[in-house]
Length: 254
Length: 258
Image 1 (spheres, helix red, strand yellow):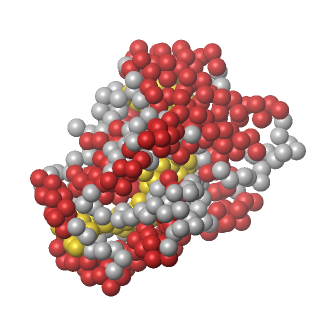
Image 2: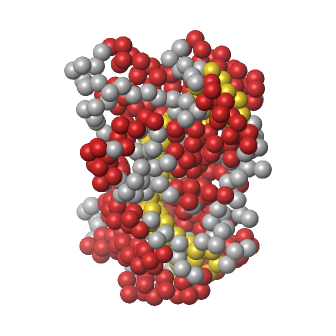
Image 3: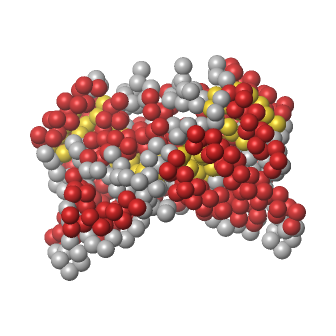
């Protein structure tokens, strides 16, 4: 059996925000299968505990920590709780995200702030907390879950695209700043993936457009994001930083 | 305990052009360690042989073929020969390339044509021939080794950048066309790497300032080693990347984004 060692995550501790559903769950399960201990930081503790149980069935270690990423005062305590349970965090996956579908002229400030806080600001503050720990151990991996709306504009989810665009720039800047600590910072652009968040797009004319524009001819499954996440979490990607990897069945380039 | 099966290449047949040195060799060794049966296409028989010895030490079937990829009529027979020896091709790595280090005024038509031929045209032709084998089997992986020089302009050697830029675009077009056949086509873009091709910037004193600029601009603070390309290559060759197509993975220690 030739399981390539460079992808092995034994000894790693991964934090996945929003890891209790959708893409986050797909990534959390993948990281666990590859050997990492995984902390699920999310709002719905029942869903989180279910994913913890799935991970434990893989004979990996996992813990659920309650966290609403918009509550800045809770970020450090949540990360500390994860470290107390599993050990120093070596992998941070900034995955938690929300979307508010309001057209630009109708978009209210409260919704705007909430989307930017969840999808961009919290990612920065969590990265900051994680990096302070990773620096001590002279290595770390930060993986930001971006979006096709990091590349493209949209009339439908303006605040979401602004946040996801900012997230890509943040990825590049943190990559530059923290290379000196051997912390690699990269982003994944999932394509259109079958999750609760994309339910409105899984039927109707918009669905037809997505399928037409996706060379793979289908939505992706959340589990299909795991391979890219494991790659970016592992030694196989140690010389890769500031990269934006499209895992999208070819949507971005058609 | 860790299960990294999705990255395994056990039983897969991989062809690596220019796999007898530099980045190609780094990739070939990585694919072999992941379980693949690797065929090297290269011009230099001595280097082909040395690489074969290294591949055989890893333990999977391997072979080499002496061929210059600019020989258009020999490309299909080469792939046919590899398939007869190792089996149907699952993974094609278009890596063979060279640069003519001349500026615009010195660049001859022959310089231009020869670089485009090896660095771009051979990739189109080999992809076509490999796809002819992959399409009926409804599976395959094509990995084009591009370069950060496919995005960034360079002050000299325009033919290289044009080839690499074209290769990025070839990647996207083939990704779209071959997706219905479950063939993923992606590229890997190395930045500054320690190989014979960068000997001039690393070792020639007249380029010391340029080398320093490149290193200063690389957050990782150094050139890459060829084996640091292997991770991305194995990822793109494996089922871990089945929903990744038309993508480019830049492996450059952060040079491009600074």
